[in-house]
Length: 224
Image (cartoon, rainbow, N blue to C red; front, side, top):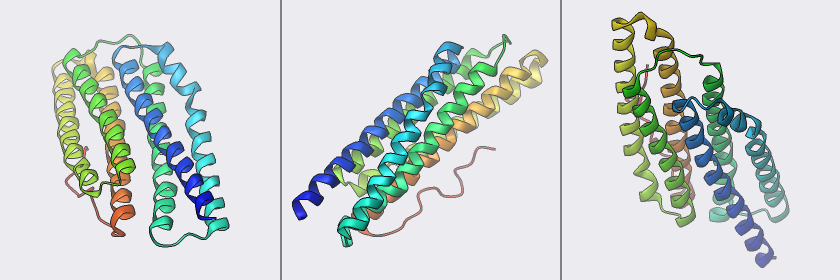
């Protein structure tokens, strides 16, 4: 019975980490589609969103089945609970990527602010890296590593605040930039929210490793 449980848990772990990597790539692709004004790429992201949703449903179903069948306790139970909690967070990240893609399609041929678009690209790279790293920490069962995600999220907050400042200043200087700047603010908010979700997963990794509930999203992580 124990061998079967370990095999199924390993499969569950694999499915979860694979979903994390797919989500990270989707986020990165969504941001790149926006700054490249690639509507075709944005449509692909929207059309493939159901795949992330299906993965979430399958992982949740498998998790509940394992709890009912094996009735795990202590560390085994914490691992399954962590996956149950974190997989829903990954799905919400996918929703934010879809929102970015939707914004890409909505944006029309308006004037652009190259500096801000470069900043958004850097934010997209950073948050995708954060997602990949937090999934690695999950695999390694590394609580201390997971806590470092909070520092990167703080950096992301600072970047988002800079996008906000530059966008607002651009709107003040040139009324023709209002539409573009407003979209930049929205996209920065989506990316920032993904960063917050990443720290949520880090919190569950700490719980998995130690059994302790901690807060890695302090009040200073704001955008607007």
